[in-house]
Length: 68
Image (cartoon, rainbow, N blue to C red):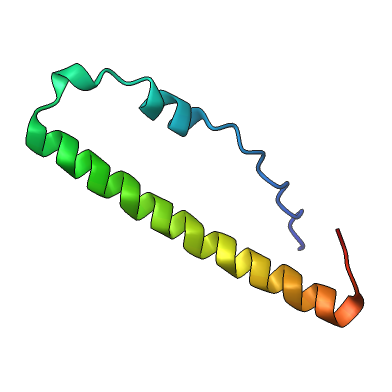
């Protein structure tokens, strides 16, 4: 049996919005430094995924012409 293709997930930004509005007063210096490190790692992970998607799009554009 075939499964229906998953619908693309719309970016709601909920997690980012929650993190951006979190009360940072309750954290100590070490916890804030760990938070910064985690956020920087997430930025790098996101940049890596973006680069992969752009490379795929560029390859498709080179093969089939501009798709935008």
